[in-house]
Image (cartoon, rainbow, N blue to C red):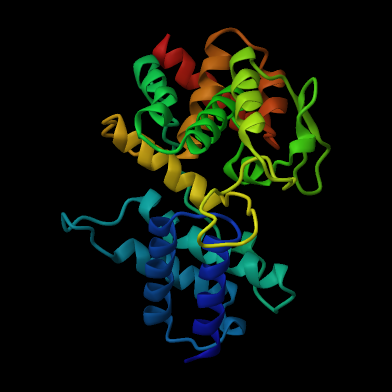
Length: 289
């Protein structure tokens, strides 16, 4: 196996295990990079330079889609984003690689974020109590869903929460960022208290696994396990659209802005680096208003 293929496999593994990317996302990234390698015929990441990227962009523009039409710029960007992400991984691990920002993307109008309607939201929140699972699991999942809809946390932030984060507010600490203090709804606090009262372990993690047969320790839920949990509940209540933690985050942002919340306050709550990201949800609110 060539050096670059080994690096790609390690990166894909890290995406799923550490960053909680879904299996479909990882498969797509793998497909995009396989195409890049097949086209470029390179064996080492050091061979990737700006001239190669420019030729790759031209090649992508010449490729047909299933309708035998040129690939949309958005589809070409998927290939380029996968390559940028891989280069960023290499540099983060102190391996020589082209700066990812030198892989230029095509300018496309971003799609509006996918959000849940009121009836879908209500159904998803009620789903944990319709599965016949053990009471501890029902309480954990109900508390998790209520907290997610109350705060709009990223799935990685949710998985990393400790019991100590709970107080008059919820303290969310992201890497290299100032902790955010988020208000809890009465409903989310009620279910969190019921869930924690049911636990008999001393793990500091807020949301833990209950499959003791597989592990003697009390492990925290991972981002991937939370993604699976949400997908499962969406299926249980018959939601046909694909529901992810990001869908819930989108919905929280939309509901806040639609109710008249200040743009800056919503940006702070969601932990957005730029108000431009937050404004997209204002567009959704206006479109649905």
